[in-house]
Length: 176
Ligand SMILES: [Zn+2]
Image (spheres, rainbow, N blue to C red):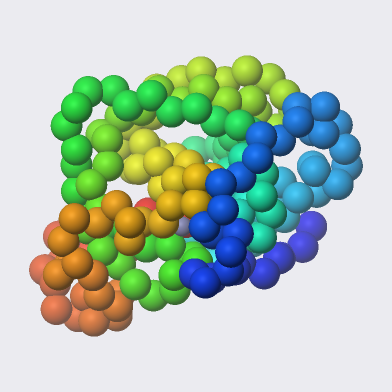
């Protein structure tokens, strides 16, 4: 496994819709190695999610792992929001280092995708898991969390926010 370079805002891969990953390619050692590298790169960067375009690779592929849960890779995911309510919480992005902002997301999503071996996934995610999936899914469509913000007054550098925000508003989570 290897840690790969995470591209930052300004790299065209972050603004280009990704192509479906042909399921037959999941048998290639090269693709399995990419998925392993995505997990390793995500962990090394202290993220909880990562999408292939963040490595400059234009495939519909994302990974995430929440504390205490198994790692998950989603290939060619499709999301279906559950309920109309949007929930605001802090997000950051490994491709936009150090910044955090309040981003509205669906509280729950139905996620359909292939797993890393081509098996069908169909499950409901809510809370932080739903947020991470939506953040990474956006990367597959050339969208970053700044595009989703409705009020830039919450945007700030995490160090400053941590210094001045109340402890219960800590902007630490959902970095991917
Ligand atoms: Zn991101």
